[in-house]
Structure formats: structure tokens, C-alpha cells
Amino acid sequence: MYRLVASDMDETFLARDHSIPAENLRAVRSMETNGIEFVPASGRGFDSIMMTLAPLVDAGLVPEYVISYNGGCITHVPDEEVVYSRTMPLELAEEAFELSRELKMLFHVYVLNGPVWLHDMNESERRFLEGRMLVSEFEGNDLGFLKGQPIAKCLIQSDDFERLHEVGDTLDELGHGRLASETEVVYSSDRYIEFCPKGVDKGSGLARLADLLDIPMDETIGCGDSFNDLTLIQDAGLGVGTAGVTPDVRPSCDYVCAADCDEGIMGEVFERFLAPDHPRA
Image (cartoon, rainbow, N blue to C red):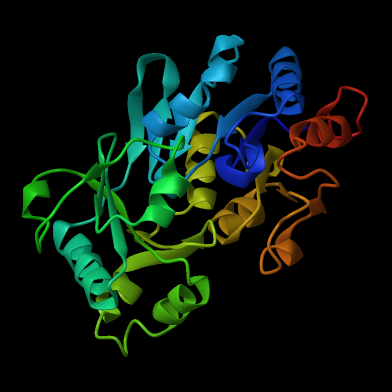
């Protein structure tokens, strides 16, 4: 019996236009009716997740927990209590910022349950972020203004995704070996290289929440579409990919949906693995 379903947000639970497909709303309601916990698991911050989940909330389907920052934070939604979090030292964020300036690429830094700060905004990113999250821009050559604030993760953005993979593979040669050894490096949305605190990923976030809820990992489902969902898919009892799951993640999926994110995959997941008449339900 599967009792906990964790899903990536962008291009998995959400359609490409950031809306929630009707099929997903129906499926989450069916999960609630059958006592199955649905949990968003995203690289976004808590506020951005809840803003996007407004239709779910309006339908009376408020999730009890949210996994944010790629597994770096777990929040109990009703009272917004952070039940688990991991952050990175300011010096590591400074090194990621220095790398972005050397590459002449846009930089994000996420403050735990606070603002997302951007340096060197470009029009491509402005269009991409519209409707996804609220951001603040900063100037200058250091992150001193964040001293004492809990930093959840950092991102570097480029429309040249292959170049970002090259950067991740050559951090030592670029003089940034500390980022390679002291952070978790992941890629997302065909435009980001992300640096998270060591040991932070969506799979470990799911494991911590499952332990909190006293649910064995083999009774969990993890749904995703890209590399930053890999550990979620690998570590869950059942790993599910969307029809558009990336080629590097597809081999790790136990099941790949016929539906894509625009159609809504949760109905298919519910009918095949969670419905009361299914052998594992």
C-alpha cells in the first residue's frame, strides 16, 4: 500500500503554463479521500510553492507538508512551522557568486523562507520567472548584505544548458573545487546549475518526511521529470516519470506515464497504483 506521494512541481505536477491540470486536482482529492498524503517537493521556496498551489488550496486540498529547496526544508503547512532545514555557509554562496561573475551569467541566491535575490537579470530569465516566483534584484560584487541570513541554495542560469553541464564537470579546473566537494550540484529546467548544501536532495527530503510520518519508504511514490528529481525517483518505493522525463532520468523510473505535465499525470498514478481496487492500494 502506498501512503505518501511526493511530486516535483514544475513540468510534473504543474503544466508548462504553471497551472494545475484538472486531472491532478481530481487525483489529489481522491488521495485525500483514501487517506494518502500528497506532498509537493520542489526546488522553489515555500512561499512560491504555496502561491502556485492556490487552486489546490481554494479547492480545500491544502497539503499538510511541503518539501522545498530541493529537500533542504520541510514545512508543516497549517502553521507554516519549519520542521526541518539545512542551509549553507555564506562563504560557499560567495564562491558560487564569484563563479557566476567569471562566467558572466545570472546568479540566484535563495534565503530560507525569504527573498530570492538575483544578480544580472536578463530578459530570458525575466520571461521564464513570470508567474513562478517573486524576486528581488541586487547589485555589487559580494553577498555581504546576506550576512547572518540562512541561505538555502544558489543557482547560476544560462540558456546554454550544455555549457552549464561543462561547468559542473570542471569545477576543479575552474578553481572552484570547494563547490564540487562541499555542495550537491544538480541541474534543472534546462537552464540552471544549482548548488545546495551537502546531503540535500529531494530523495533525502522525502526520507525525512516519511520518517516523521512513520511511513516506510517502500510505501512512498516519487514523481518527477528531470535531473533534480533523480533522487526522489530513485529513493521512493515507486519512482514515476512524466511522459517527458529526460533521457538521463528515464532509466531510473519504475514507471513512465503516458500523460505529460500538461495533461496531468496524477490521475494515471492514482488509477494504476493507488485506487482501492489496485493490488498495492
